[in-house]
Image 1 (cartoon, helix red, strand yellow):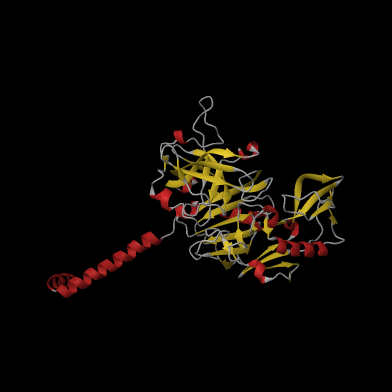
Image 2: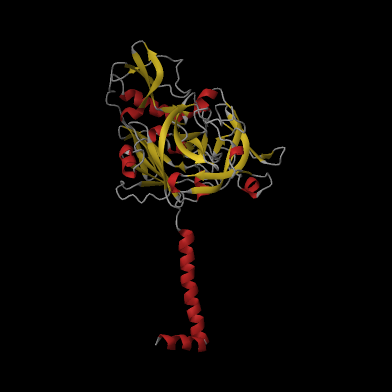
Amino acid sequence: MKSYIISNAKSNPFLKTLYLLIFLFFLLIQIRSCFSSSPTPFIFPLKTQILRSPSKLQLQHNVSLIVSLTVGTPPQNVSMVLDTGSELSWVHCNQTTRNNQPDPTMFNPNQSTSYKPIPCFSPTCVNKTQDFPIPPSCDSDNLCHATLSYADASSSDGNLASDTFHLGSSGNISGLVFGCMDSIFSSNADEDSKTTGLMGMNRGSLSFVSQMGFPKFSYCISGSNLSGLLLLGDSNVTWLTPLNYTPLVQISRPLPYFDRVAYTVQLQGIKVSGKLLPIPKSVLVPDHTGAGQTMVDSGTQFTFLLGPVYNILRRAFLNQTAGVLRVLEDPNFVFQGAMDLCYRVPLGKTRLPNLPSVSLVFTGAEMVVSGDRVLYRVPGETRGNDSVWCLSFGNSDLLGVEAYVIGHHHQQNVWMEFDLEKSRIGLAQVRCDLARQRFGVGL
């Protein structure tokens, strides 16, 4: 029978065409499945480090989330600040050696055979840098030169290049574009030397996650020891609490104060002890200039609110802690230049009293800040026998920032999923130390 069908197909043009179409149909399915399959997920441990990392805000010190990996051929160790608020990943480069030994805090491009500088007239330099705050330029060697500047007066500049990034035992990514920054200016070089660079994770075309082609990524920060994990790719975790999703706000037209490649969500309101504060909706949406967007930023430690909203929260929290906490009566002390509601807590006190919770309400999701995370103990600051604790929300007006910024301090013990494919962010309360154990991270 089989030989009859084949011979009949050879003599019948209609059957021949039919079999050819069926063959092409199944071939197309195979090709689509190959190209649509997501990259293999990668899991990295996260650690925290107190340093003065380049920040979009004028902060005197910052607890940053650090990812460790290797770059180049042969591999060189680098540590990078995980930053969902930046696009370009960069490392601190040094093309010299000390006593024939490489500087362990820097990346030496001369020691990497896979390092390739990007020409300034290349498609990468011309077409993929449209969302850089400062357009790249050509240096004297006609290489693509990038300059990054930050609100705390720090800056870095250097050339765009590509190299191989080694993602542990999971595999290597060749040709990944990053900034090889040979000039970094800061008021605290000792602190800056603790990290090699920055991992840009926003939605820009040259961000680390965009170049990797992952449809989503997630991270989770423990509230106990501030360790965590970063997962690049789809987690497919069956034990995870169902996520509540909030859509990303997208504005296609350029506006002077709106970051189009940031993870912008819509802040609907704020609750204190479960009660919604009387905040006008009009101050929670971006205005005609783009000012007033709400950004989820892992590169910033605390959460900052525009002045009118911050003042409403400040009054409500102050009223609900009257008689429970002793206010620091020092008008000259403003932590981080933006956090002016602080308290005195006896040094011998091991636990804070029960504090009002603060909830950030988004479209479709809610982030509850409770317990000790509502306040933050200021390192090294005392008044007599008292330590100083401040409300962990600040006034962004005092920083000259026209936006709401949700920092990683309030993302502790929250599974944060950034779904680029569906343009949304998922949140779920979870014990991040247990999540690390389940993934076998840091064991």
